[in-house]
Every structure is written in structure tokens, then in C-alpha cells.
Length: 636
Image (cartoon, rainbow, N blue to C red):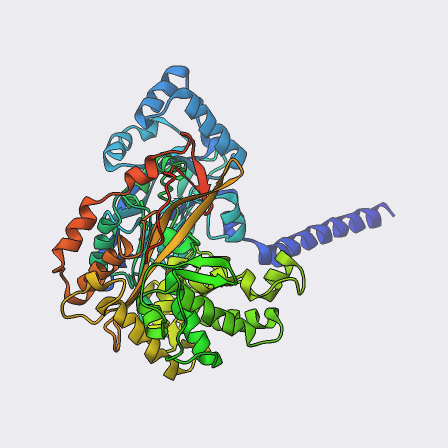
């Protein structure tokens, strides 16, 4: 009996061992991951990030070596106070910062590496590498950081910053301390540019000391570099636009109508992209971001929603022709404005009356376009239906919605519809006379500069546009197909010619006649947008915004552009000059209107922005600014 019990016990124990061994080798072994093995240390080799070139092959963004001091808290050998101070002196930090960084690393993980002092220079690395053996638990990891070969286009190029916990949760590729694109193309094309990290697996002994490559490096992988990209920006045109925008606030967006490629995307004020590289990155970014007066990190070309002003009149002209409510010969009287009964709904500057469509566009007659707009709305029995038809036509030009481009920021603008006004006034309690400001690009209509540039491109193309985009070529890959497909407006092609002729006459005999460029047929439209804010609850008018949209040449245009200058008085004063110069610079490669250029370079709007109403900042279009309160006549 005892022999049977002993035999049974032996067999049972043996079966338990066999079952456990089977589980470990078959079931558990199948789920084993070398990445999760705490006995093996993982060292990441960071890939070369892809280079960035402009449309003409000029290198804009390269890489430079960077060195991170990494820490594994569990492996730190105790240091006395003198050793800690010496280490801090080498790292350029104080003891309190040392303790804070160490605690942060412990909170992240005692056994996993995390950055302690990132992005050391080559000089700092040369000093540190000689003494790092003294500091167990710390090591230096090499990788690259950006080296901008230019001082322009910060809003276009973007920058790299350390990943946050949200980035890590969203994509397992990232670990604490990794860099990720934060703005511009660095953000839009992060996965294309970043490449793939390589990994070295290091075997550790029972004392947690490194003893060499795990299985002689069998599982080690090499980093795969990111792909180089070519962007659509013309860096010379971009630099010239930023020069024109100096001492001013606003946005310039230039497109190639035949492709939708963005030739220039200027925001003012801007900053040097090199400020956001290296150990000073966070401090410099905080300084830029907290500048609530100039707002250099706010891309006005993509994010600022402005009243489009008189350039929007050409959209109303096209809609009216499509809806058949006017023809090019219909004339309307102008008595220095539009009157509804005895009430003046909008003013207008002096010109001959009555006015037809060509004159209405070239002389920018407000009264003409209020009449046109009312006819569009009143074609339908219900004002809401009329506004919906009008809104759908306007939206077909890419207005009032995101353009579905490849830019990381943007705002949709606004084209109000019938529901919008029902909410504002109540159902069936409003009429066309309530909303006539939309006729002249004021009222509830808002657009971003990139939308206005796209609108100009669609008109220059006689009814279609390509989605504006920043990518031109990806190494070994193709750009998204959506950028190669034309989008058609709701306006028939034949209606564009009279409107384009009116825009051409803006330069010949109209509001931009002093801005003609020799040898280039430019079609444009000046604009002046009234600028109101509330100060202590009182609606107050500030200096008008200056707006200009154009395309050139008249036939088969190669550039379409929108310029918006905050508090720039009227359309031809600042924006018109800048647009004409940009067009000439792009088409000819040089500028001949040195009189316009000199005027722009010698006229600043800093005084306009600096004169406070009470010494405190206030908000305009969601931006905190200091502005002067003055009233100017609206002059296109």
C-alpha cells in the first residue's frame, strides 16, 4: 500500500511538472514577447528623419546629431551630494531640477529608460562621454534633431516636440522622450518623415548588469530612415511674401490654379523656425505662444476668419448669372449707397450711375450688388429657400467649410443658410433686407485667406479647382489621389467670362488701376472690410482691413492669390500692392514696380497696432491685440 502511494505521488508530481513545462513552452511561449522581457534591455536606434525640399529642389530641412542623457532609475548607483552637484554642473541643471527629473522618470517606470536631459549639443556630448562611466543608470543615446536650412516658413515647416501621453496611447511606436511633429508639415507628414526605429537587445545577468547582445544580436534590427518629401512651396516667393508682411499682421496664400499646389503661405508676424530646435525649444515656444499681442504661432492664412469684403461680390455676380436674375447689361442706380425707402442700408463711394455688372465689379459698387443679392434671394417665395440656394452656390467654391487639405490646422469660415437666420430672427420673421451686408462680403459671411485664394483659382479656371495642398512628391510613393481630382463649382462655364472681364478691368480702369504690372494681364478685386469690436459693451469701429484677391495671367493662370492685411485701411493701399508684387515676382522672377515695393517696405502698421484704447489688450476675431480706434471711409 505504501509502495503504491509513493508510486502514485511520484507519477502525479511528474505529471504536474510536465503540464507546467507544456504550458510554459506551448501556451505561454506562444505569447512570449522579447519586448516585454525584463531580463533584456532594449536600446533604440533612431532613424534619420526624412529631408524636406521646396518645389525647386532647394533643401529646407535636414538633420543634425543630438544626444539624450537617458536614465533607468532602478539601475542608478547611489551618489553623494558632491557627486550629484558635479553631475548637475555637467548637465547644466541645478540639484532641484535633478531631483524633479529623477522623480518623473521613476513615476514613468523604475525599470524602463526615459529621457533625463534631452538634445545635448555635440560640445556637451564630447565632455560627458568621458565621464558617463561614473554614473551607473545613466547613458547617452544618440539620435538626430532638425537642422533648418532657412529662416522662413516656420508656419509651413512646423517643428518637433516631445510626445505626450496621448501620443503614446494613440500609437505604440512612441516611447517617453520621443519626438513628434507638432506643427506644419512635420505634423501632417509625421509617419512619412519619421522612419522606423531599430532595436538592440542587451542580455542582463542576475545582478542586472549588461553582459552582451542577447543571442549574439539575432533579434537586433536596423533603423529604417524616413522618406524625403518635396513640398509645393516656392521658397523664394515665400521669403518675399514674409518680407512684404514685415511690420504688418495678416495672411498671404498663393496657389497654382492648374494643380492646387500652395506656392506660398505667409502669416504675419512669424518667427525663425530654428528657435524651436534644441534644449531651448520649450522655453522659446512658451515665449512665442504667450505673445498674445502679435500671436506669431497663429497661422492667419489658415486660421483667421475675416469678412471677405468686396472680393465676395464676384461670387454674388456669378450666382446671379447662374440663377438668371440679372444679365450683364442690367443697370442699377447708386446714390452714394443703397436705400430701402428712406433708409440707407449701405454706403458707397462716388462713381457714375446707373451701374452695370462690369462697372459694379471694376468700381466696386455696393448699391449694385445689394440689388443683385436681393434678386437672388427674392427669386424664391421663401427667404430661407433663397438663402439656401445662394449658400449652396457659394459653398461650391470651397467657402464655408474645411477644404479637406493636408494642412494640420484650419478653420471653416462661414456661409450662413436659412437655418442660421431662422435661429437668429425666428422662423419666417426675416427677409432679404435683413441680410444685405452679405452682398458686399460683410454681415455674417467669413472666410480664411486660403479659401479666398482657392476662390480666385476657381474663377481663373472658369469653374473648377483642385484641393489646395502642400505635398508635391514623396520619395518612393505617390501623393493622395484626392489632390489630383478637380472639383467643379455649381456655376456654368459661360458665366465666368463677363465676371473675369470685370476683374481684369479692376486693373485697367478700376480700383487697382495704379497697381498695373507691365507685361502681365492680372485679374483682381480690391476689398475693404469694416472692423468692429465691443469695448466695455459698446460696438466700436476700428481701422478697416485691406483685402485683395487676384489671378494671372488672365487666360490659363499660373498663380492665384489672396492677401489680407489687418487694419490696412483699404484694398489697394496695402493688400493690392503686395498681391501685385507677389504675382510679378512669381511670373517674372523679379520685380519692376520698385515704387510699390519701396512703399510697402517703408510703411509699417506697427503704430496702428500699438495704440491702445486704454492700455489693455482686447480681442478682434478671437485674437488679443492692441489697436487704435479711428474711423476711416470705406474705399475699395
